[in-house]
Image 1 (cartoon, rainbow, N blue to C red):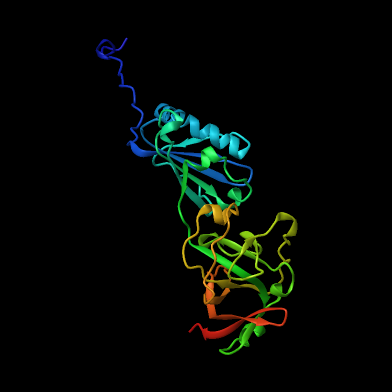
Image 2 (cartoon, rainbow, N blue to C red; image 1 turned 90 degrees about the horizontal axis):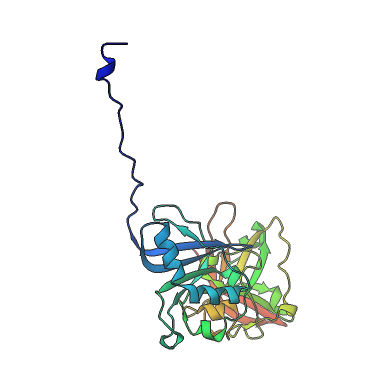
Length: 285
């Protein structure tokens, strides 16, 4: 045996503690659906998974109501502070506060639902609707989507006109969407435009699918909306607020091939045969 053997002692290490997570005033939960992710934020200080479970349990009344509204029970997952959360597509935001006469009050909650999911849902039950307070969202009313080539765009000039072929077909279909949804063929809530300043929700049986894409670039004629719309209007549950008759209409080149959406011209709507046209007054620099 080595003369140093008796002097050697085993080296021990203190157990490593789990890294502390700074408490956050909001506990964030996400749940996948068939097409997208939904998000729930609970106003509660959470440091670890056990805290998160308690915070989620405190929202049982809201979760039960959402299960009934969605028609399925989302599998909520806690997103620990500092871990990346999923990138939600453009979505509606709502605050939830339990009514005082509905039992013990729960914590304040925020709900984020993608517009694509919201438009597939029916109006929330009255008891839930009374407790949801939706944020308004800037909106865009698309009067027409056009496939134009470069030669047609070169003909645009002040005093000219851009015809809206869809306005000459009954029912004239446009689209209402939140401003951050981005342009794509047929994206948004299909609306009927018998009067372009008073869009109405188009019944599902009357909606036409978007035209198939071509090599031409997608352009849109849009009508300015004076104020943000609430989620009930953008989802198609409530009547849509009317625009001003003198609202300006604009022509846009939609985003594509890595380029962002670009304003091209503006003017006013004018009758043209059995439909409408955009009378151009101002062109972009």
